[in-house]
Length: 347
Image 1 (cartoon, rainbow, N blue to C red):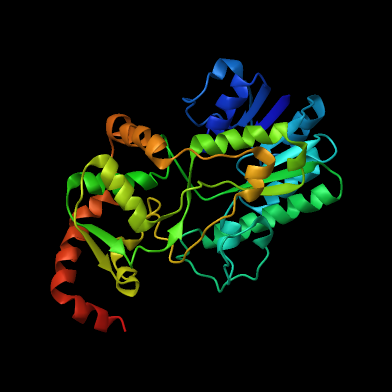
Image 2: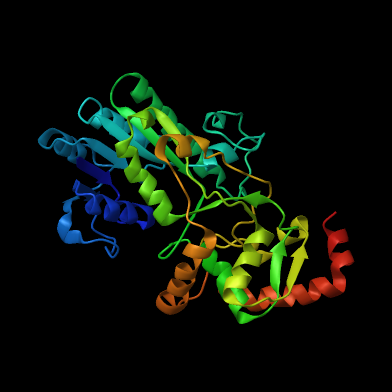
């Protein structure tokens, strides 16, 4: 197939491109040329350099070349999806949109397991600490609305993938490394709340395979898919599994959430601080993906060792917020001594 991809050099998209190359597709990537290309053979891909927000540039691309499918990997606000609809509607038969499980997690009510039709429940009151991204989820809902409208108007056939936390080597969010580095240093781990809320991750290669498998399924047209691991972990379960692989078992200290949230290092301008702390259980049904796409996830114990190796032997930098590690440990000591007093101050 002739494939056009907007944003093909990122964490997820570069893995998709690698698989598309292996399957012999004719691939054109739209990129600004600012990202390093490391995960695939760039000699087997055609590059078109430009800005996705430049309508004149996109119009020229749509009018001068024909494509069988358009992957939009980096639409975050509805105006971006609207421009794609305006420019490529009627010119490309199919569009595959990268969405997110955050479209569910901005809802006031969550009922597990969460199915693909649960994306329109009323929004919760705006919560800027939503661990799934409050504004992000709202904007992604709006992107979906634009594209479903285009689908229903016959502009192109749409498929969407909604993924949770995506993990693996080269993850720019470094979520797993937050815990890997802290486990490795042997100092106490500060755990927000009970650590008992359950959710799912997904290995980036499993997710990438699903993006490619959509091309093989006519049944997937006009549908959204949750793509998540079959394994379900609470934060505590995740840390148990990670500690076993690392052969380390540092002390864990649980800090009640209303105290934790007032700590200056509980948030970070660098990105996710204390990742996989979900505040409520969120389990996503993958029955549709299993039925239509024969989706199967790679077990944690198979993909995580390679991720650990990448962080420790290739990445070799600090995780998000690790400059505050001493402050975390200092607070743990303070929490042990003055737990009751600290709780009383926040109630």
